[in-house]
Length: 206
Image (cartoon, rainbow, N blue to C red):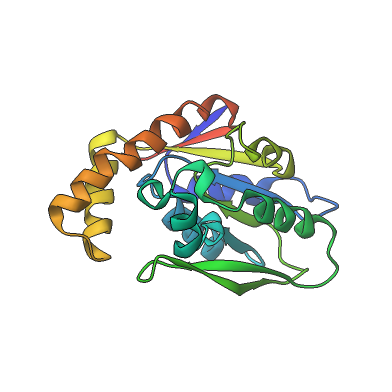
């Protein structure tokens, strides 16, 4: 397991890999607030002919979360449509045409169906999300769909500060943002951090 200390080093590593006969799918995972989305976006800018698939688009709708009684746990493993996520990953392997995937509207906190179209000539596909290495509740099938996975390691105080700031930006009061970051988000972070040993490499950011 190699530890990388910046996005440039990760991009150079991926560019140096031997050509793959099929589309390469690379996972970026880590706890909430680790910076996965930013890393994914930066990698796609550095890697020609690449694409980004965020896992957030597979959140259940607000209506479905309320039906399940999970609205106050949004972001936990069972608040995502893991079966749909797995179907998309499988399609990325076999489809000869574009693969359509949902995005996520943070203002509305709702998935947006078929907002992304990943063309067949794009590789690698950078998949970023919390539970790529989780091994329960249906998530155990995700790891085998990924060629390699990077785990993002960020000091907890920095991660929590980012989370609180993000929650405030998207409409929560400072008190509510702090409660969510130290509550639901931190519960999920502990689950995710326990999966880090399954990663191929670590991205360590200070």
